[in-house]
Length: 148
Image (tube, rainbow, N blue to C red):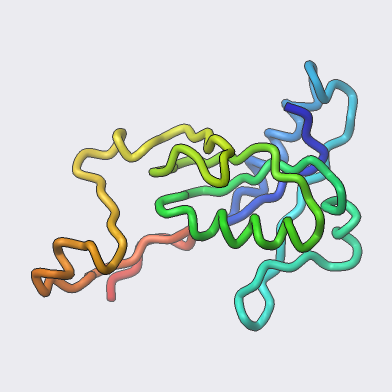
């Protein structure tokens, strides 16, 4: 796939730079520079791009890179952002993903839910542990593991 810009979420900037370098080595993007950018979060947690990086999104073919995709909510937030800036999402890459596709686009990942024994994820209204009164004891996100 042809890529103009890699958007890095959840601390994937180094991987994004490596990916952009590899994609520009040979094949479809051979010899073409690929931009690597990270969105900012505003006061209401929306992803935004500053004036100096918007030109890397407007009308560009975008690959979204994320560390972990368990439900797809973060990817959907990024898709909303891309639609606002008229970016064309052509691919999604993840280190870990429990989802196979989002918005008709395959999510390519190094690791899947099936790689982790006993891994499961549920909406809050369908969680068997929640129904049994078992509270969440920790959260895992791109910053690490936090007991609560």
